[in-house]
Length: 218
Image 1 (cartoon, rainbow, N blue to C red):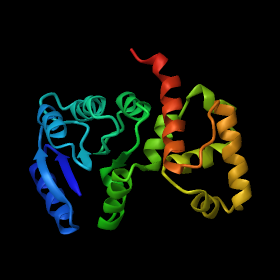
Image 2: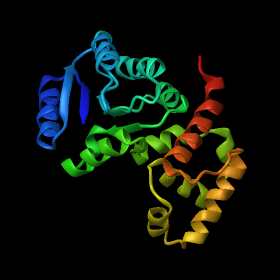
Image 3: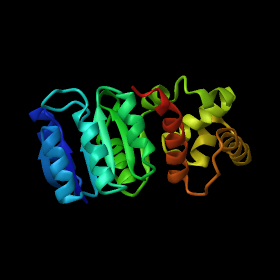
């Protein structure tokens, strides 16, 4: 599996490279700035990219903007954002493009190799890997969610993390049929058609949320 890494701190960039190579990934580029990331993504079209949000030259949101631009050129290019920050505006835009293969992890909440590698493989396969704190910040205060019950919001957040129906049921102590009913209700209240594809339904929910939030973009 071919990977592009974008991280401006040398030790982290080198550490990520060594970690992924130890798990059989091929790191085709390891860059430290937004322009270098965009060029590497377009040139190599990796199976997955690991991207920090804040990269040179301005250390604001170059990483996310480069990932978004690359996905416009190559729709569905799998991207895992690995950052200390939740950049809500561009994170919503990344999710709202409708393509599969998106992750957003917080550096201080990745606790072991297996967790991180599993997230990369899931995203490379077209799935999602969302930290719960990221999900909570992305959906907080979004008008359509006011229609959801507290239990439906819990189910939605677990869906956005990439959980299956069975995993949601185990976490919330619900039967399979109860989870299915909650999900059907969520899609109904948000005006979305239900899908049997778990990854795509998560993206559809997040894209819908992002789209409804985009009116507030400056």
